[in-house]
Image (cartoon, rainbow, N blue to C red; front, side, top):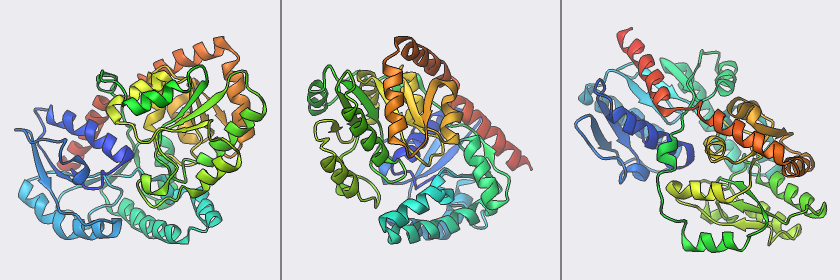
Length: 383
């Protein structure tokens, strides 16, 4: 398992959940190549061997490092199948290869338009180069797996290759396990919003999560004089240096200033993942305005926490939430604001959304994901 690319967000969530389940299997022996972000978390056992590669920073350098070093590592490990988790495949893998593809930006026309509108041509060029490698990777791998049927369909149209959908999972026992409190500064900032309608969005800042539409919706709600003061709770800070990647948060921060939302937008900063369930349960509503997505783990986490969901109307969100969410056109702050009012004015609707969301979250299982993945690996190895 090549997990060098697991450095933030969904990549870390995937590795943290899949590796322990592979380790628990008596019919599987796993050799995993880890990046820096996971080296302190994953320990060796009689079923798991950990390799620590000195991978240089940057996708292009990582790609070259993998092409040069992975074949010998695979041969020495005695592996039957390679699981590449970072969107890029290994050319001429010595064993059958499963590629996990989970970056929707390579196929997103909205993202390209967004980058051009922002004048971020350097990031646009970087994305185009990575997209070329990602398309080549899907065509090179023996099998490509996508975390949702919607994204699998996009990849098929983009590459002309068949792509398998295996949903990512959710482990409620692990997610709700940690009983330690939220950090004191986070608790203090939440206490200051007591009595307000707390709207939560869990994400570090990037462009495709469409923060600006959500911020504008808060301004619309403020003008409409919602019966309760509305507070948008963010698990990031709108400062470029405080977020991973090359996304510039200046425009979002300036929008908050222009719309005079200094009190309404509460920037908590990053919250440790094991403590996130406390934050979900402290809020009233979960909203995601993302215009590109492959699975969206926070949606499942929110539903499992009993939090009603309002999501942008993209195919992936409808696949994950089904009837458990309300949907709005992805660039319409006005419709989003109307849905917030509609949901919060009806206690019956809120109760129905909570119940439907809890049931829907139970459809996602990491055990099921690993079982399907291993069946696929076995077919490739035997074939």
